[in-house]
Amino acid sequence: MKKKLAVILTAAVLTAAQGVTAFAVTSPNTDSTINTGSVTNNGDNQDPEPPGRENAQQNSKSSPISGAAVGTDNVRINADVTTTNAASGAAQNVTVNERGQAVIGDAALEIATGEAATAGLPNDVTNSINAINGGQALNTAGTGVDATGYAALTQSNAIVIKDAQTNQVSRITTRMPLYVPNLTASLQDVRALVYFNDTGRWEWVIPSQIDYASKTIYLDLPGSCTVVPVHRV
Image (cartoon, rainbow, N blue to C red; front, top):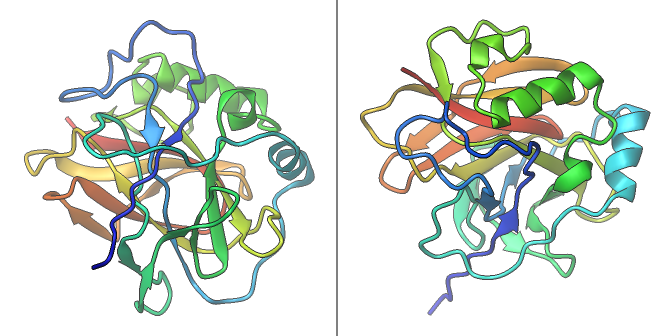
């Protein structure tokens, strides 16, 4: 019998705000936790992250995956589950390596926490992240994306994608199954507002799949980024 494994990883708490009032439905804890996993394509790695961001994340400590995550009220990605390769569509399993990273194929995922979550980012981006996590309306957070009518479901999650062999930050296209605790079928236009480190821009990412039963959205990510799940109100 295959033993199910669930692991959690504490995501960044990027603001000292008391609560996250803009988060919709039943907002999760401000200390959102992540149960990490991903799916990578098997293509060649692209250019590395910009030097400031890459070095900051590489040299800082991201939180390892730890503990059991069954029934927690936090954002997470399950390990030891089957998902699909972002490029080929082939089924792949999320595993956990000796470093406590969630691994599929060539990619290893971590969640940067504390100062590491915004290390190397421009001040305006850090300010936007802090504004979102502080409960400010998405459309006034300074992302440059027209988010009128959208609200955050959780706080931001700083996702670091590394090469599983070298443990170096890499641009590997990864399909990330993200558990969102307050995701329900009644929500409209669920998507993610994502800041991509390599492009230096905030962009919309439309989930490749939404599984309301398991409260999971699948996001295809080409490299390390900051993810905010949202929905139209």
